[in-house]
Image (cartoon, rainbow, N blue to C red):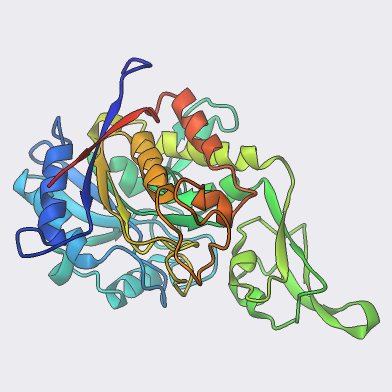
Length: 379
């Protein structure tokens, strides 16, 4: 694609006034329109990369919508499977057994989705392929084995905010979502959490989520109990920051946040290196919450539901998603307290420290796509 050429991004809105305009039918037509040239060849093993949602989360992509994608793959004589990777943090998706159980409890099964569920990096996150990328931060990346071995991939992303990356869309789904647990640790390495002694109440919840047992409760100043993080054990997964309801843990960067963004992109680059022409991206701009679906809860959406986008370009679809979100008026009484007017940056309104544009710029530099796009609405 030339520098000035625009990538196509197709779009359906959220409105439905009858069966023909139901969201499921709209999604079917959207994928058919966007998948040109065809992603799937007869006999292809097609990984449908999605997020099954943490236990307690309610904003992940609905299984009935995933079913439309599965049916599309079958209609094109592909062999679909639903897939995700194990988490770095200690939750209900840190190993394949609990991960699959959580997916079933959240409504994903062969009956509902019409395809088998495969955790791509194995039982404990150790099943991966080391791929050469020869980039700025990584010479090699660890990509989940079943994702790398798939012939094609349809990437379904629930767009939302993220405490470290600012925006969670197709790029984050590729970078963090396709790496094994070790790869996730490598991506997170530029940051460490820090206890805020004025806010920490020593409740101990962060201890339960730490994968390295790096947190303990100690006696602090004036005999007050406080959490303590052993920097020698900490791997920077940031889950203590997410789970602390009292804002008792904050981010401290070992390097500029730019490094974190670039490391994510390098893993995204590796995840599609062998099949960049065999990937289709679908972003769901609904239930646009401030945090990741890895949380065991879901906060209120910050803007109204918008619709669904599809493209063969991961950068174009993320840029278009961000632009559509920013065009909205922020919903009152949510985490979005600034930048609520149309045209203001909603992502930076929540996370002013996260310059998500860095990841898009770096991915464009690596030739992964373009942020220059043309949006076409599908009726």
